[in-house]
Image (cartoon, rainbow, N blue to C red; front, side, top):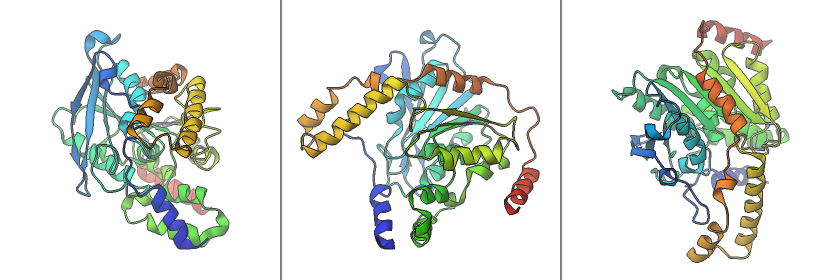
Length: 347
């Protein structure tokens, strides 16, 4: 296989628009009584409009008071939009949080002829955080960021100037280089380098989760399932744990799960239902059953989407406990930790 062919495969997989699929169901605030939505769009540094919304429950539908001093930014994964994660967003809102979530460049409602690769989620998040922190009503609020996969990569690397108080990275990859290395074998070094060079046009391609936490005074929770087939548990989660667990014991926590594949917050029964739907979706594609609007609608209406997206309360209890935990008492000095990290890497 030629290097150009490998690069073209990446373009076909990553560098394209990701729009809503007519054969899938996406929840909205209208599906949950008392859940409010307010539009707030942001212009990215590339000039694209990123479409986003604030979500929160009316007080009468909450068991606890609305947390008006805190904003949670939820960052979605690749090949999707923020509404693909609406059950997660609703879970946070139900527990009193105000949530802001948006569609990345080239995804769903946002502008962009394509997604611009692995690093774009990080660049978009930087733009979003900058815009939110300039907002008069938000600038003094505590800021938490939660992201999954592509959004998990952005979340674990979000920069220090935005004063993010806590991050939760779910099934995230460490860096662009490491996710490229995961998918292209070591014996194809020439292909690896060519693909990585293709992905290094923006500053976000060089950030690395093993270093980013050293650079900011932020508490972090990393969550991963051992059987993740999309983002390797061994190559990403365990590498993070190796570098950070002993160096930053008060600052970072690790939660490893099993039999959750790439969606640790889903229940086991939801994952089984999701897997069944995906097998039948593949078959429907092959048989041409989704070539018409009627066929797509019929497929979509034949599933219980509440069951397919059911959230694991035990996992969310751990996330919520982390978000409720006190801030760092003695934040580490970023400069000294970076020096220690560089020293450890050279040994």
